[in-house]
Length: 198
Image 1 (tube, helix red, strand yellow):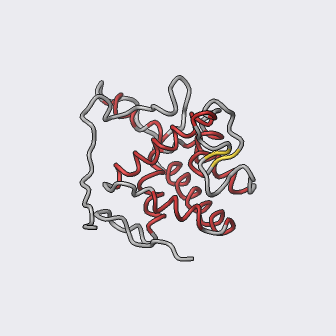
Image 2: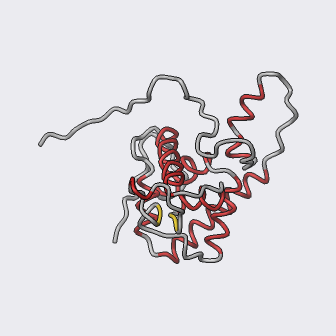
């Protein structure tokens, strides 16, 4: 089976496949440290609840949105095990938000598909090995970053809040799905779409 290995348009290469670029530049900045640590644990232990081919078990059907999650894909697992989300609806919303944010970061509608297709279609042992290396890299990079200095200016508080998903992983006192949304209240984002002639 072959995978779409073309790089995401308009985004510099991260030295490899498109899935890796989308993971590093699209998803990692949106994932808390706690979410990455939970995913690392699931990959290391080969947790059978870390599934491929579906966002959640039970599936995200309207009639099942209040049901407890039993298993989830890598991104859903981050929200479920790392952020403490409980229901199918919560994890589905978290997943959708991560995909939306990744697409915005990469400047391409459905850029997230490069990671999702790779994750779903690649043999589990390869996914575990390669994704674990990426998760460990992301965690090591966060640990290597110097701690942010105490608020040096009154305006720096808002910047610190918007970086909290990526830097400290703290979920206390905030909605892990909503986070701090820099585009809340602004006009909707639109993507150019070109349709092929039939």
